[in-house]
Length: 164
Image (cartoon, rainbow, N blue to C red; front, side, top):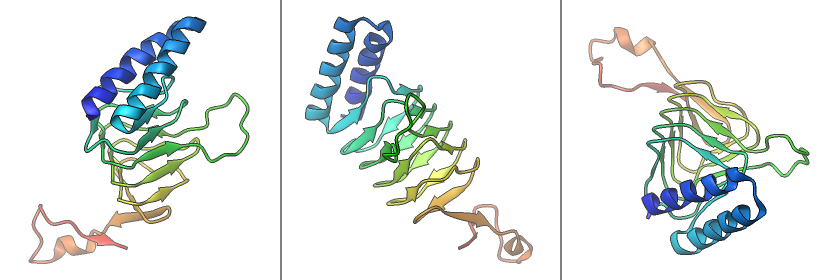
């Protein structure tokens, strides 16, 4: 159902961008129906790049000013939302870079940037920008790979070592 939700969003987004009242109304109707059928709520104004994979695609919410890059792997219950602070006409939702993984149930809030290749762990809450190729878990907790283990005789290129 993820592919269907994305296809519906792409049509709604094209209608939204025309700016006419009738097309905006149809775009909102398509978004509402897709939300009802697929349990995926992507605002028609949101920008979603190519190669996005909505795995399981239940409970996904993407806000109106969110920008989702290309080649994103997004699991179920992901929220790309606003903080609720009054921002006027400014951007309120996150920007997700290319090649990111958004784990099940993660929440990314506010006008922040998730860098290219970053991973957001399951059930993480992110309210600060994440650098490229980083991993974040919990509440804004960045995990960094350690290099101390690379000198170990047991080290191989497929091992992942983290310092939490």
